[in-house]
Image (cartoon, rainbow, N blue to C red; front, side, top):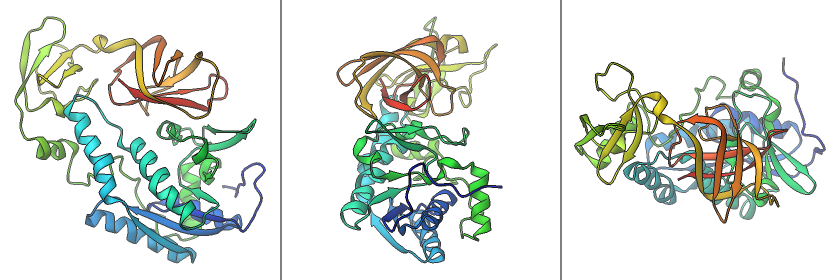
Length: 358
């Protein structure tokens, strides 16, 4: 059984909290918890696309707001979302990279236009979302720590948040597991209590798939599969943009051993294949470096993720001017351009920073 929790040092107040309501169970319970803590709560939903799916998100969020008896605002950011997220997504695949649109959306919209509108136009003292992460103030710096539910920890997607954003953000779910959050939604009969987990790519709705979405954008572009070691042509494909480093499924080439995507030459439309052991690396280069807080050290040991769903690996991080080099203690699989390389403190796991693998 869960217990309603309050962040250390938090005072129950009548400060205004604006909650980013996504129409899902996590943001719904976030609004509920802040109400219980005494905040004056309002909800806001970003209309990301000019589609019926986006309309449904706004309608579901409105149902939650009505249930809680709070105001609900809709901010149409669809024009900017198309340019900064969807175009970025498409262009990344076109140049042989694997994008992470959630990270860009967090920076440009959740903690960009929506955050700014909440603070500047709605008069919010704090902005809240349903992310599973914890913010602590340590020595006058705001730092992000892992949530209680290690299976839902979302620090990886938040590495672009700086001190300005963290100082005015609340993550009430950090003290709960997903099952406890779901139970609260049932206990308080929230409209989203039975809602499914949200999709990673919100602008690609079933039955649409990423492959079909990209094919409709770029069309069929015949290219070749090549053995990464021998240079031998192994077969043909319908576009290098359909593949990502480390991919095994969907290659369609018969071989005496499993084949994996090792490298992508988007300019010449060539996809290089090899064995799994061909895909391990000891280093990764990071560009567009962001630090969660100012640090003096230019070289330090850290735990690093180059994908969200991988265990953090021990590494040496060397910082440069807007860039970093990661040297892993043991080789890691599938260092993929376009994904995020994120580093965490060796001792307590708090977020230090990250950037794009390049």
